Structure formats: C-alpha cells, structure tokens
Length: 156
Image 1 (tube, rainbow, N blue to C red):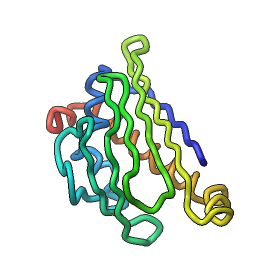
Image 2 (image 1 turned 60 degrees about the vertical axis):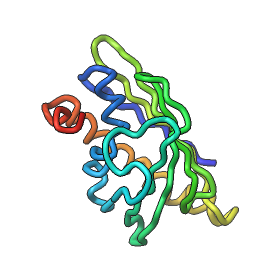
Image 3 (image 1 turned 120 degrees about the vertical axis):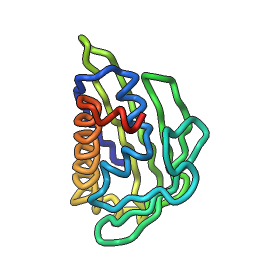
C-alpha cells in the first residue's frame, strides 16, 4: 500500500475548513481539471457519515468512476472516506483538522493500493503516488483559498 500525507495551514476557523472539505460543491470546483462530477448518492451540499458519492472524472486520459462512503465523522476534527467501488484495489482517505494558534492545520492521509500486484506497485512508485499527491495539494489550495476569502459563504 502507498501512503500520502499532505498538510495545509489555513487561516480560517476549524469548523469552516472541516465543512468545506465535506462539500461536494467545493470538490467539483477544486477538481475542474479532471472534470469531476458527482453522479450518484450525495451530489451536492455537505456529505455526512453513512452517505456515499459516486464521482465520474477523467484521470490519466481515461474516464473513470469512483464511489466512496463516509465511514466516520467526528466534527470538526476528523472524517474518513473509503472506496466502495473504483479503479483502486483499496483506498481510504482520512481528513484530520487541528486548531493551532488561530489557524487550522488540515492533514490528509491518503492510503491506496493498486490492482495487478507487482505491476500495480511499480506503477505506484513510478507515477501514481506523485500524481495523487499533486491532486491533493491542488485540491487543498482551493479549499485554503475559499476558506480564507469570502467564497465559503456561497458554499456553506
């Protein structure tokens, strides 16, 4: 399994950051490059524990679908989503939030395993881990920008 950890400091309240991270609408904005669209389950608003969303997107030039379920929520500090169906052999994503001196530390722990055994592990090492890290960093930059500005008022 591959593990990616991304930490982002946001000059905004923890609850705002937590809710923006659960926003389907913000996710669509932050992933415009991959044309992500929520096509089943929760398709707008804030996703909650026990709910799922199916995303359709173009990654690596291939149209793909990924269904994730929110398996645990501890507002405003933590939530976890897990792949139910998709291209990975397995995947879970932990979203951790901590208040630090009036700022929010947003930490993503993204753990995944590709199919195809050795070939999948080699693909992770050569390409996919870096690709997914850039994807998360870019998404977090949008969350940071919206949380620190006035854009959050349109989403929450």
